[in-house]
Length: 72
Image (cartoon, rainbow, N blue to C red; front, side, top):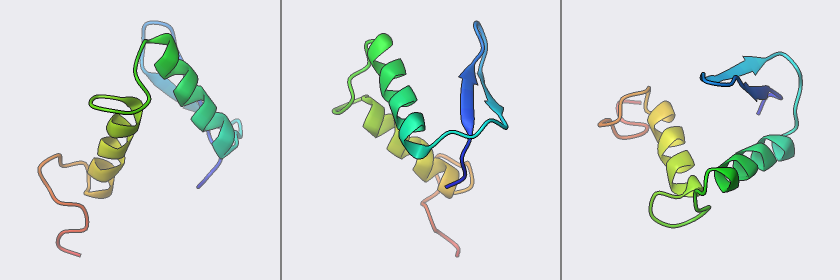
């Protein structure tokens, strides 16, 4: 995994900078943000479920209805 820092711009989407960040820092940022927003870390609609869904969709080529790895 490449080292990337994600910065939240007030009132906007997250912006990716060229400043390196470790995987641990990225995980900590996600967990802290989820807690601040009152999002559960596990369970239905929680951070882990949402993150897993986004990774699988990205892996499938960005198509929510497409099965990951299909057609490979």
